[in-house]
Amino acid sequence: MGTSGTSAIAARTVRITALDAPFGASVEGVDRAAPWDAQTSAAIGRAFLDRHVLAFPGGLLDPGGVLAFARRFGEPISEVNREKRLGEIPEVSRLDSTIKAIESGKDLLFHQQSALRNDGWHTDQSFVERPAKATILHALEVPSRGGATWFCDTEAAYEALPADKKARLSGLEAVHGYDTVRARYRPAVRSQAEIDETPEVIHPLVRTHPESGRKALFLNCNRVDRIVGLPRAESDALLDELAAWVSQERFIYRHQWSVGDILVWDNRCTMHRVSYDSPAGDRRIMYRVVTRGDRPF
Image 1: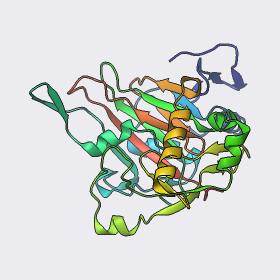
Image 2 (image 1 turned 30 degrees about the vertical axis):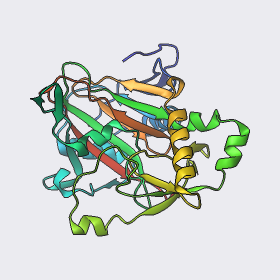
Image 3 (image 1 turned 90 degrees about the vertical axis):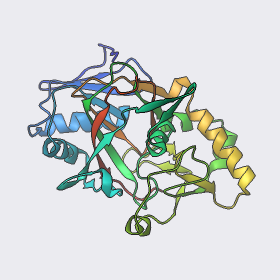
Image 4 (image 1 turned 45 degrees about the horizontal axis):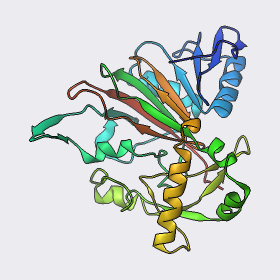
């Protein structure tokens, strides 16, 4: 993980260093399991708003430790899919994205199409009225190579749009759902209770960050089905255009995981995706917590 040593912020022992990337920062010198003083919390909070993705290297935490850490970034919420919940702590999910493949001629057949959905650019929980604020991901096991998580800065992508494009997007709304025909792969099967909990919702295509006041594109290639009021062909063309725009290299940070890493990112101004390029059988196991956000406006 590359860093630039010229942008450290001091808050007692904490070191917050901008990554050698368009956005993101590493946070070192802080005890992830102990309470933070006001100065440390304020410095990390500013970095979260300004850099969008924070990487906290360190040792392994148990599920309760991950949940306690996540509470520093908001109110944890339970995973919709019950099968991903971790036992008695429904706010913590255990994510297994290990590639399990069998030979079939020249093709490798992957174990779960629902897991492969993570290869598409997405932001967490956009299919609910109050989408996720932060996602906290803790690496328990990582593959020998590959398996990176990629992020795009949807705030910077919006800022870089030409004025006429911003004008076209102003006021447009999009329908988010648990599934859409636009996604490459189908999601995990839901129970009737889970279906009842996740009706379609409508969010603005450009949202205003409730803390920074900055605008960002609010997209999700796995969940956005259509733009309200546009014919399907026009809606698809515009969504495809925006997806290509935000995935330019100038808006991208790629995180290569080490065991023990905690990554925290702001779903209100980023999307992310997983690289399914690690060797089959190399385990990739994470704990995840998401925190409740505000209704986009």
